[in-house]
Image: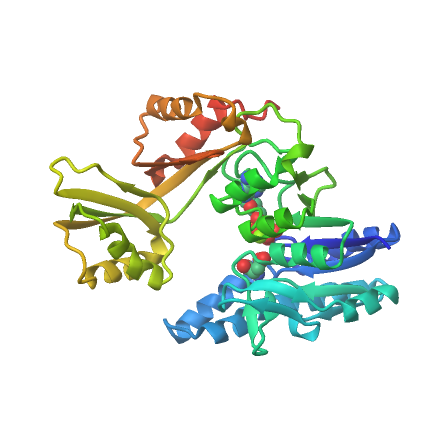
Length: 406
Ligand code: ADP
Ligand code: ASP
Ligand code: MG
């Protein structure tokens, strides 16, 4: 029995006309005798609207109610897809996560799918039905509705592919696949035919919104190949798979940029063991994600400067946590909004020296100042002024010969 999991993102189900097109894609798999499980996200913009409403009610909206509220978007989209398929003469119905159930573990707003009860879906598939399942949501062991993080329908689809041992898992979206950089930011971006889990995970974590990072981790752990393709154009997409299947002579596979980052600097911090831990402890307690960190070597052996980045939405919380921290001393505290992290990613870097130099030189040639640097085996990230993002993307894309020549 050939099972295929098809996931449609918010952009693909953004209007009723688009939903009609999505129904035709689903029908085409059914006609090829696949057993089709559909996972859908909410109509584009709906989740954001719901979050906005919650913030109008309270600036400290309860996490449990947040999940009930924002999961409503997926219910609407799934019913509309099922409704269209029924209209076209197919047997179809929507399923909400609790009706299966899809069991999650972990905190509200950021849970992980742990188990999917297959019985009802299996029975329905065997009867020739097309189940349309809500992405992004589940229920926990207390029977409360949960959600699995923004963009989480990607992870829902991967988990369906895992539990149902699907032959294929296709992520339908508004672009033709994964590109060397966001095609909506750079016209010269080129579609990548095949990419490894490792590179895709770095790209997704570093700002390539096309796939949610958790979903790539799950796919990698369970060796699930992912196809990413367009809901609107009949073109081949991108295959995300294991590294050993890929023949690649590229040094850099992709480039990413982030938005809405802020830089925090503590000047004149005592240079002694335990200081960094004292600074970061209250931040981690407040669930603030600290990203790039740099500490200067202290010139006089007594004090030093510490700089790190956080998401701008966490900046006020960060300020408060530092100012209220009685365990640290510093001379001056500085904040700067409007910084962006630009990263070049590629497994080819492991075997090719000189990538760091080429990146820094390309930015220097454009007079772009690098504020913070961080590296891993397969990526180099730099922090720059947000206003230079486009210029940096163009320069690096050209430097590493990624430009689409057409
Ligand atoms: P969906 O609604 O299908 O989940 P998303 O908005 O989450 O879609 O992701 C698709 C978007 O990701 C594209 O419109 C594109 O602007 C953005 N994107 C960012 N980086 C990349 C990249 N490297 N390749 C393709 N798309 C990218
Ligand atoms: N609708 C959810 C969101 O906007 C989940 C998803 O799009 O995958 O984050
Ligand atoms: Mg998405």
